[in-house]
Length: 351
Ligand SMILES: C=CC1=C(C)c2cc3[nH]c(cc4nc(cc5[nH]c(cc1n2)c(C)c5CCC(=O)O)C(CCC(=O)O)=C4C)c(C)c3C=C
Ligand SMILES: [Fe+2]
Ligand SMILES: [Fe+2]
Image (tube, rainbow, N blue to C red; front, side, top):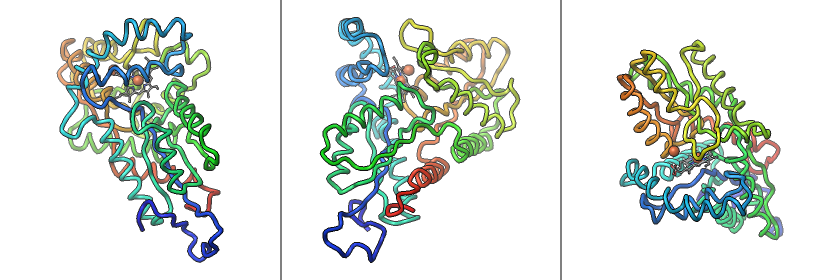
C-alpha cells in the first residue's frame, strides 16, 4: 500500500462514493537547522528562531534593534563555524537524523497496520515548515492529525512554539483536520526504558565512566518562575533514569547547557559542571543529553567537542558523549507505542 494512498483501514466500509476518505497522520516536528554551515545560511535561520517571542520574550521594540543591529551581525559567523565542525556529506545531523527517525517510525507503524497512518516531518524554523507540511497532508486527504514535537520535556520555548505554528497553519485552512498534540513524554515508561537501554548498551560496548552527567538544553530561569514546567520535567526524567539505571545521587548529575545572553539560565551550567568534576578528580565522565531526540549542534559540537575540551583542560582524561536515541530501534518502538496510545479513540485510523 503506497504511503500517500487514502486507504482507510476499514476495508468493506468505503464503497459509498460520497464517504470522505479518512486518513490519519503523525507530524513529527523538530527545531530546524540551517541549510548550509555558512554565515549566509545561518543568518535567516537565527533571525526566525531568535525572532520568535516564545524563545525570547522581550518586547519587540526593545529586542528587534538588538537582534537585527547586533546579534545577527555577529552570531551567524560564530555559529556557522560551529556547524562546520559537525556538517558531513549527509548535511546537518539534526536534519538527516530527524528524517531517519521519521522513516523508521513510518516503517514500524506500517508493520503493525499497513497503510493506515502517514508519518511526516516538519521543522519549526526553516523548511519544511509546519504550515507546508500540514498543507501537504491536507492535500493528501488527511483528516486526523497527531502532532508529536520531538521534545520529551515541555517548554513554552520549544513545544509551545510548535503549538503556535500549528495554530497559525490552521488559521489558513477552511476545513482543518481533527487535531491532537503530544505535550511531552518526559516520564513515558517506554521512553525512559529506551534511554536506559541505549545507555546500558553503550556501557556494555565502551565500559563505564565514573559518573554519568545528564545535560539538558537550558532556558532562562525567569521562564520557569513564570510557570514553564520544563525544569521540573527534566529533573523527573533524570530521577526516573537514575532509578532505572540504579545509580546513586552522586553518580548521576544533572546540568543545563547552551546558555545564550546575559540572563540567568537554569543551573548548574554544563560547562561549569564538567570543569568542577574534573577539578574534583573525575577522570572518565560519561555525558548523555536526554532532552534531544536526535543528535545536533548542541550535542555533537557543544558537548562532544567544546565540553570535552573544557573537561580535559581542567585535568579530566576523557569526556565520552553517549549518542542520542536517533533512529535506534529503542526510540522508534517507544515512539510508535506512544503514537498508538495517543491515537486511541480514532478507530478508523489505528484502533
Ligand atoms: C536564546 C534562546 C534559546 C532558547 C530559550 C532555546 C531553547 C531550546 N532549544 C532547544 C533545542 C535546540 N536548540 C538548538 C540550537 C540553538 N538554540 C539557541 C537558542 C535558544 N534555545 C540558538 C541560538 C541555537 C542555534 C545555534 C547557536 O547559534 O548557538 C538546537 C540545535 C539546532 C541544530 O541545527 O543542530 C536544538 C535541537 C530546546 C529543546 C530548547 C528548550 C527546551
Ligand atoms: Fe536552543
Ligand atoms: Fe549551543
